Length: 210
Image (cartoon, rainbow, N blue to C red):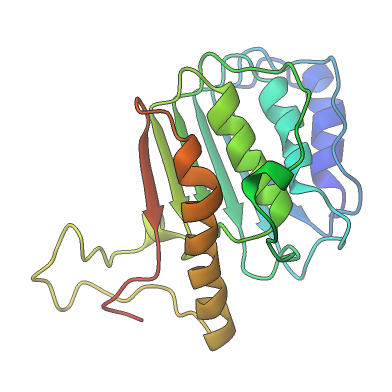
């Protein structure tokens, strides 16, 4: 179903106001999500998946911030970006060229954020920066560039002597190139903005599998 994310933002505050955990899967979204005054006051866990074939080239991933603004009690946010689901617009210039968002929305409950499939798409970088700069309660922030590290069994960091644990998701040559660009993007535009109180981790391509 296309437009499910916008529909959910418009409708859920009136039909499921007491929801505490929410999982949304968006595909072929062609409209950005507006900022609205309606709230999901009891929502604590939110997971959003952006699925291919792909979204509109004009889709603004940053508009997902509307869900964060609507959820003052949110503690955990997971964003999964499927490979090729969004346009990877090139990152150019320096970090001062990123748009400045004059949004007052802040979250004082959000503690854990995980983004899988992080890439160099400008609006995704902007969303990441916004969360870091506007969330004073944040404790853990993970950027997984390999499309689902938290669900894979291969973890060379935790099991350096293992040989038969399992392989990471395969990345195409183009996907591997984008993964390296994403690592560079995180280094250049995001790491310097991470508060010292936040445990920040960038999970790049596994050296054992790639």
